[in-house]
Image 1 (cartoon, rainbow, N blue to C red):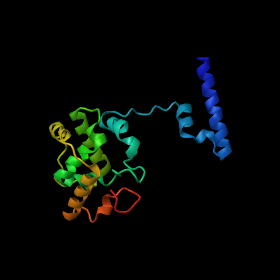
Image 2 (tube, helix red, strand yellow):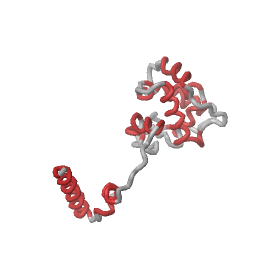
Image 3 (cartoon, rainbow, N blue to C red):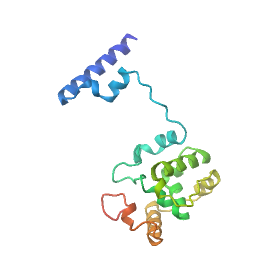
Image 4 (tube, rainbow, N blue to C red):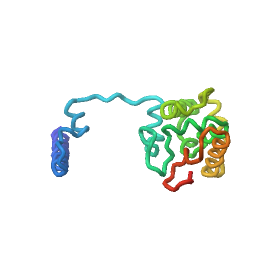
Length: 176
């Protein structure tokens, strides 16, 4: 117990010295405030927990990350305007190979599209089902970038998005 208390004191002293060097009051650092106020943060559960474990590391906690990663916020819903787009979302390697049951993967994908891109969903949006996930997981696409380009071009041609730039995610224009 004393060792733990000593580690906490050293950590707080370190935070204090770093903050002091940066001109920041350590009492305003969120982690310090949470500990001092004994704030209990709600546990993330269900599809949101699955997202945080399987997707958030690359796509960010708000569906936006670095430019090299596809932005989910305000975009992923567009893919559900076509059968090829629905399939593509499931067949992206880290989704396809997620260690989740078909039911949990369907719930997570439905949560993602509704949480991050509800306004972009088709008016006749149909949630993923476990059966659909099982069928789509059985299919493999030979080239994820090539399939993405095909789907994006299909969405442009159908008038769902104005141009491929709407769904581009790379810092190099036109790459997706």
